Length: 307
Image (cartoon, rainbow, N blue to C red; front, side):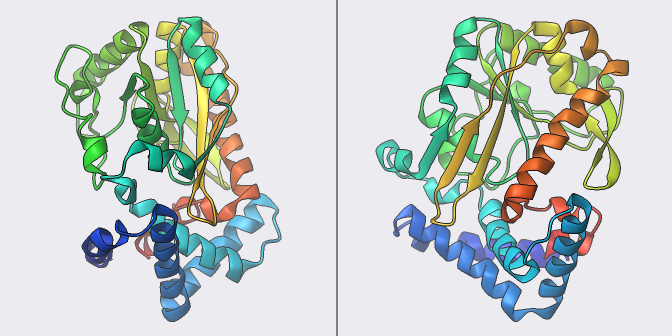
């Protein structure tokens, strides 16, 4: 399965130069067509998606049209795996109309408050497009995550700043030890205090001291609580962000209202309710828009993840 997935990624990357000659929305709709066609033509993929969507709907108490949702999900997963590559090499003035931005004032007000900002993302929808948009709009952004792969040259151009608060030293690795983790958290905290926006996800499955158990789509997992540790260390405002793919190939980018974590609740024994709150919000988004759920329905199915 991994080899098949890599082959499909290679095919998409091969046709990307042609897609970039099209208007971005047209290229995005073509990728959607690729995913929908795979769903319609391959019985193993169709059954995998249908089973996953049926299971997800049952867990969330939703009565979806399973074939319709499955086909839309298959299309959006191809878009998701293409990251921001369709937008590479395009001028910012041509990118702005693609984004329907809601709640920008929530982000701007949190920045103006002066206590730092933790931009809390997730893997719903086009999860790397908020960062692309923020770079385009010249926000002072840093990413606290594993270094993204298969992204645009535009985004990669922001990754190799090696200064004291540069992006390069803020990327993390699952293979790092406890000392590496502690150092990276301290660097991130310094960056937040200096006025940079720190973007990380609240739905990262993780193990170790900075993790808490919560339920998501009917199963228990341990999730990273690094965002809570950073909030407790810095007093930064937390601004949740969601970015869904629209049927026309655009993006719905939403910055939710900021909230704060009391310092005493950022400790390990108090973090689980906050993690659960974030996951419940993601489940709410999935109920409303299951076609943007990406691989959430497949977390317990390696076959689905590779489809």
